[in-house]
Length: 73
Image (cartoon, rainbow, N blue to C red; front, top):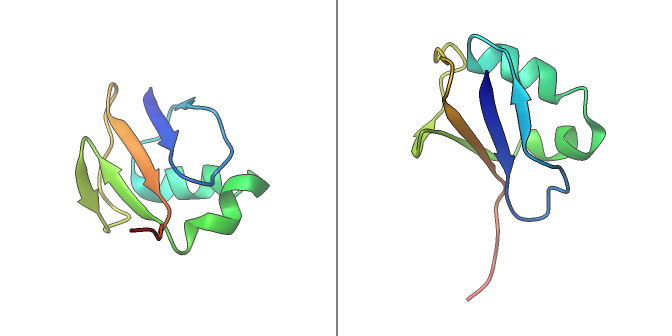
């Protein structure tokens, strides 16, 4: 199981999911309307490192953070 945390305006609780890579995670998150609308503009961090490759493998205990763009000063 991995944990998925959502930052900023994404109104979703931390999720525990059993997926093997970022592609499967994306497919699972697209089914959640409050998350899906942010996916295409959000960065993804796995264990505090930004990842862009959907084939990035995930293992039990990994921490994924969905980072929507923010503005401010």
